[in-house]
Image 1 (tube, rainbow, N blue to C red):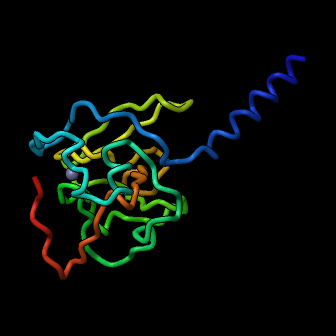
Image 2 (image 1 turned 135 degrees about the vertical axis):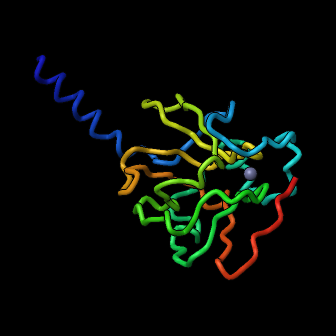
Length: 173
Ligand SMILES: [Zn+2]
């Protein structure tokens, strides 16, 4: 009987990696480690300034469907800026193909993201967001490739890609 319940437990644990890697997130709180001044703007004020799909992810802590973002397969050199306030968050040099269906990076641009713990699912996860506007971007996991071993799993709809031969857009307030 004991062995049976152990097996049951193990079977339950083995299902955990199947949970969506970028699913629901907690509301961002403080911005520890951020070097960018936080924009004093209500979440609802972004409505209409970003697409409805982006708003759901950024300001209602939603998650896009895996494989739905063209940025998952974006391979050009450039930077990824926040879809709301345009703060650069990632560089193409740090992007890798995680096979999850979400754009993934080994690290963000230093100081441009903040994070908080998210307890909405079985395992606590670390949610991260744009340090400037607070818009939710994704979750960070410790199963990424070198050099950091981290996987920053991002919603593509929360980012805009800017190729290296184009000028970065002005920050939005
Ligand atoms: Zn932002």
